[in-house]
Amino acid sequence: MNKNLKKRDQEVVWHPFSPVKGGFPILPLVKAEGVYLITEDGEKIIDGISSWWVNNLGHSNPEIAEELFKQAKNLSHVIFAGFTHEPAISIAEKILEHLPGQSKVFFSDNGSTSVEVALKIVMQFWKNQGQKNKKRIIALEGAYHGDTFGAMAVGERGGFNITFEPYLFDVDFLPFPTEENEEKCLAKFEDLLEKKDVAGFIFEPLIQGAAGMRIYSPKILEKLIHKAHEYNVICIADEVFTGFYRTDKLFASDYIEEKPDIFCLSKGLTAGTLPLSLTTVSTQIFESFNNSESEKALYHGHSFTGNPLGCAVALKSFEILNRVETQESHRNLCLRQTLFVEEIKNHPAITKANCLGTVLSIELKTGESSGYYNSIRESIYHFFIEKGILLRPLGNILYFLPAYIITNEQLDYVYSCIKEFLNNEKLLKLK
Image (cartoon, rainbow, N blue to C red; front, side, top):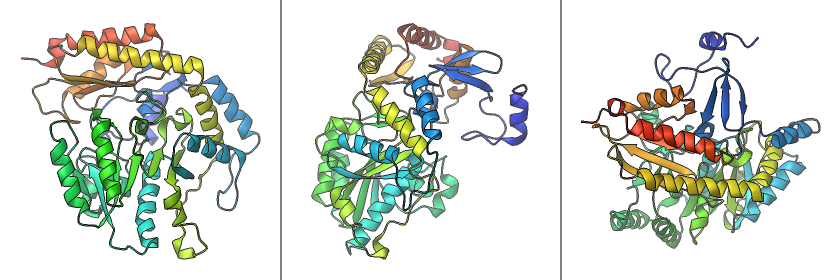
């Protein structure tokens, strides 16, 4: 039944983020276990990107599979309007314990929709307050918040969304904050805030994933949030990628004292097992909706909102993440990534190497401008696939963020292959 998967796929399936012709080849999988993806031909591939940053506990975790089976025998799904259930209540309670100042959880299906929910809440909050003039949203240059329309609007305008740009609402973008431009960034922010029409400020805390794993300091983010709050602007932390220990701490916002008003969570929430996302809000924001006036209700929902299977899996994932043995593996990964950056950062093929928690990124010198469409991305991908490693580069940004359970032996193999690539002058086209 599983034979000729690739041929059957070509006849009926349309894949994301790829030209219909060309692009990376499609590899048919029949199984995944631990850090390995296993192809139709029996080849084992180390998943070096946690399958788009979601799989933090390894594939086919037996405890999570058992929890999923157990929940499926009891309650697999129910409409979430007018009904509730133990898994949804429990995961909401558990998450709120770790998010000071947050008081309510809204369920949806993925990271992009969690951002859509957050934006709609911000816009309607001000309308409910009678402040219809507060409509502007501020984001950071290089942002990526998803591919639904609101999420595209607050993201970097470019190749991913240029077709749809005429349909997107206007957003003000701040320069990506660095130590060199901190004062310029803060000054522009204050100029925008002084217009008194800004409704919300959205950001990926400390690290922009799709922009090339760009890292900025907690100190600058703290100043931006503080300034926004001075002007009564709602701050949205898009922790879809950075949440659940990716940056070492449980949430990237744990690095700062001044807390966001809204959090968007997904990806590692269910350890990559099922689609689920959460949008959490502060008491102040929720109280604007806490009344019987129908026009002030949040009219947003999805067929699978609060899905019991996803909620049960999220609970089990959260439990496993916080076990002593998982935390030890996680700390080991963070340490090994940091040590490897120190080892290679002065390599002549590298412009810059960074690490934050489990996230390792390497900007390669190529003679071209840095970015997603840099021509070296195919060379990187094919080199590592031939070595049995999945790395899906962001142009000339080679990044590595595996599941927290990866062993030292597996890490050593990936690191040795990265060094081999860096020393391959033919592939790097260095002059």
